[in-house]
Image 1 (tube, rainbow, N blue to C red):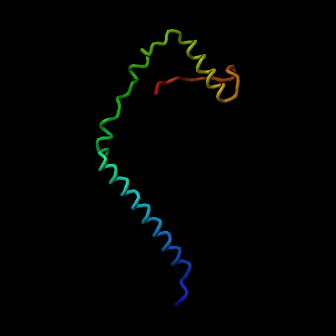
Image 2 (cartoon, rainbow, N blue to C red):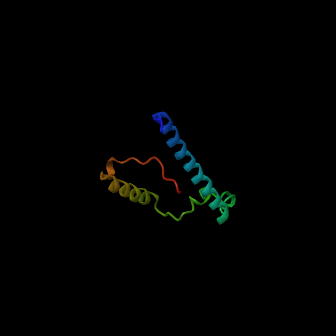
Image 3 (cartoon, helix red, strand yellow):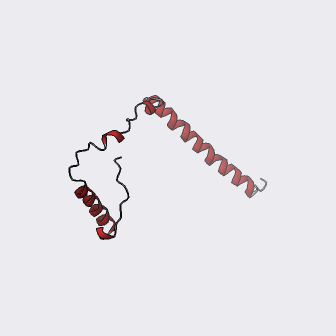
Length: 91
């Protein structure tokens, strides 16, 4: 048997990997369609709740901001005095 060049081995290996990845992509898309989440997923997304943010029931905005700052500072391991929050948006 002749010696197989290293370039041929590399091309065959990379081709096998890419073919496997393409097969995985196609298989997941097929499974998505079979389960029923193919095209219906875009239509079932929730509408944005930006209009409901002011009516969230926050009676004391300064206390709410202080609680958020304290929670973030505790998570980061800092003091709340050194923390500056530019905006709080509901997700």
